[in-house]
Length: 457
Image 1 (cartoon, one colour):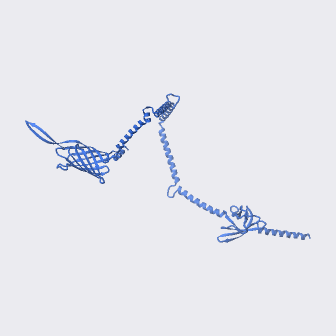
Image 2: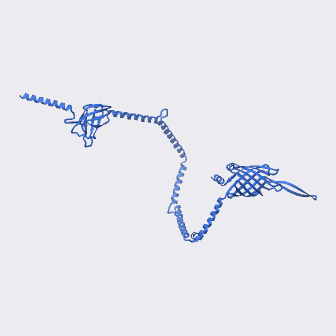
Image 3: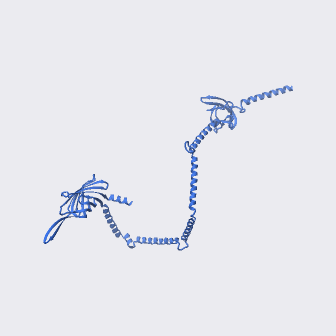
């Protein structure tokens, strides 16, 4: 009887062990009810049915099966019912250790709504060995590019390495420093006495400077400067008193500023001076200088200054000089043995000077002038073609009374800027005609100011 009971107990124990074994091997997550869920991943390599599902690192479920849906893997898994999985939870694929097996880790969310049965969890694929190898490959590729860039910078193909050039430059700098040191040594060698004297002079200068800035010494420069500044203060005070007296109307200047009648007289005087200066500023001038040669009288030069008090009126002052002057008839009466003879001679003076003093009026392109022309009375008419820079001149004057009136016809042409050429014919109505060809300069006020500024600067 006892043996029978023992046998039954043994069989019961064996059956319990078998049931527990099947129970444990069929579900490694422990005992209890399960809720099925789903997720989709793009790469399910290393994941198999019965792969554990962990929460906080502890087994909480397992994968039931994996199916291919399109180009992704659909994973069906189950989690213990007593573990609340909120709808905002996420799933990650992780690896046990660096090269271990993969498992699914549920990162439990903070929401209050529990995920429904067969609901989807968002999967975040964590880094495994494959991703690590891929990342390492990308890093190695970047390192390769950086290494090549460094290599090209330090040792370009077909060129001398940069480090070698730098070292050569450093060697050259060391040599130059050595040469500079040797040169400095050569300069100092034999000049110790001069250097010592310079140092002694510098010390002497420092002592003298200290003496000059000594406030206790009445003969020091600092004391003298203070005396000067004190004198300046006294002068400033005197100036203030003087200004106060002037403001109070004391003295001539004070009366001039305070008394209205004197101030009005000064104002009227200054106004008159201002009007006079305005008239002076309105005066324009024109200076011309010509030099050339006459077919009879040799070299000839003229200088003339026109003064325009108004745009239509002017005064002309000038000087004419020639190598040979005009013919002059001289009568010589002589008596020989009681016989009187009369002789007429033509004479020419050398280096003669003649003057021009004329007054003129401008009417459109015509200019009428009269006065002294080459030291004799006369008049002239000018016609200007301003667009061409051309001037025709007709002058009638007589500085040779015995020969008759001199009718001069001339043409002036502007060559460039202030440069002019002149062609003239003397004695146009006589048989003894002569021609003059000359060139010269003509300046107005603006030209003269520019010329003066050019030479000053």
